[in-house]
Length: 395
Image (cartoon, rainbow, N blue to C red; front, side, top):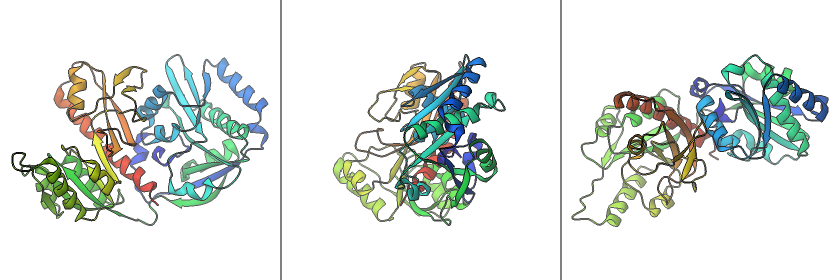
């Protein structure tokens, strides 16, 4: 499960596993001979002879981060952005990656290890389908562990490994299980209030997943700013309290309306606020009152909120489409990529910390109806991933 910093070779489907699945934290001793420089050189020479170029980067290139999002999903790109990385490529492009010494995010299963001297974190780690069975993963794994050893660590933590993958790390790295972890911490749930302005399809998906036990949420309320929003009907059908807070611009100031929105949300006492198709920019006072507010945005945004350009998996650069019409803007500009991102709500529009993102390739001549269906499916996946990410980083 790449959104859990899993250092495993995984695909997007595994990110949708039920929350109650147990994971293991493993430890590998870095003084082993297999992590020494002579062994590393032999492994790299073997890759070179096979036409594979291994590269070590102290900061993950933007195109690799986007490729990780496209190839593996989850939050692996976010995890890989803050440390070093080994990348393997051939003439067709990237094949595999192994990150190490990542500093973010603050997952709950890492907190007992972050203060331990001499322990470095391995992962995330992924091998593409076309490189499976080649031994490439083992070589990159050992290269990343060598890099941790080179940084002065004595032991590597390999976190949140699925039980079926534990034997792989035992064989490839001599790792051993040091503890079993419960991702959802005993089915702990957080109160969520959803803000929506339209049909509420993403609200419905979150409500269904929460009630099925696949998201660690209790949906406390829905707040809409349009009385005709179908999201209100969905809330009523699901026995979720719904509130409409409309704005008559002729009779009320924006500041007064914003206060009413804040008060309506405050009455629901949420742990997290989810903006799922909410079409009103919220003021700084709302951000200050509800720092745990996440917004779904229909574009692939850069992980660095200050950037105005985002690099896509094929290496092309696009504007970081922000604002209410991001998807339409990308289509109108004839771009071949779009996407979806969930980010923390901040004072600047669509510039908050990214919690999950995924790119969407736009096929030439594809009907808008088909694109809308694919984008909606991607949005549901990104929203669920971001909610889990947020929950895993909670105190």
